[in-house]
Length: 194
Image (tube, rainbow, N blue to C red; front, side, top):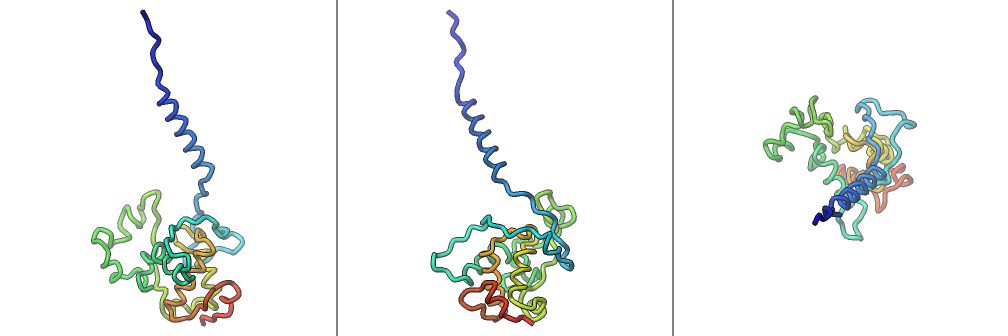
């Protein structure tokens, strides 16, 4: 007696789940960032990326954390590798604290000219602490706008407002400038940096 072949529902269910997952990812994917302007010429304000509302940084702080504490954590997770643990920049001294294989940031297949497709060419990141660094900005609001629009280098404009204000407060405190209890557009305009 001939029996019909048994068909398993598993492959069909797996294909359906895969299709749903791919559809979900494609419908929520963020567009690829446009190339960033060179550090000496900022893009005109009209062509800059709008402020991100997508939180991609996983911050794990107690609910009562201050803006400076929040900014210190964003700095640690996003800014520190390039700008140093003390804001000294991407110095040989700072890179010497890393694993030997990671100390040459500009080697091929890392952040040099022949970086992988998902990588980016890394400039020499400057210090962000000290009078020459901070006096490039007239006010703390100008510093915030630079951080919001130009950082991080590989994905400018990807920080949320909260992230950028937090980093701004932290950079100010690194430079012994009191940002006050809450830094925002109104209070930041009052803090002169020159």
